[in-house]
Image (cartoon, rainbow, N blue to C red; front, top):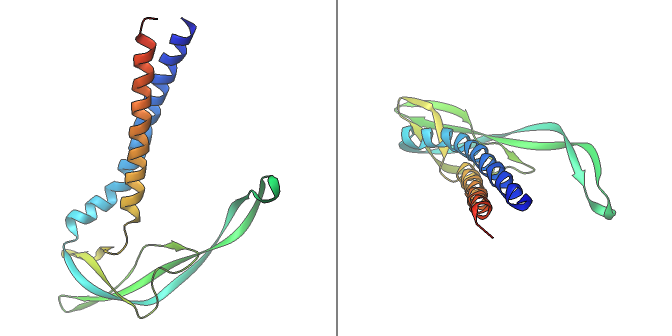
Length: 158
């Protein structure tokens, strides 16, 4: 009886956790989905600069058999794109990357822009939003199935 109650509580907790996790996945994909729907015009953009930003972050180091925590400067790079649409020139910042730039200055890449707001765009080459949301959704599905399994197990007669 005690084991059934543990399985019931574990199952409910896993299902609640998976629902919360799924919410995070939906939040990650929401902005990107909006851009996929609204950004329909493909244009060629040129990287005119990689804007460097340094942030002090907590680093966990597990070398030498123990966990060491320290703060360290981490560099981020944001490409500045220049592109032309409907006779007007635009400059917009792209997606930030860690440690090294995604593009070289002078490199051309395809972007899709929103025709009614050409400053809104997404990089065709980048799929990090898509990957993050898919991984989160797969994990939440796994936890949901595990939670349902635990609920079924708690209801079985032994």
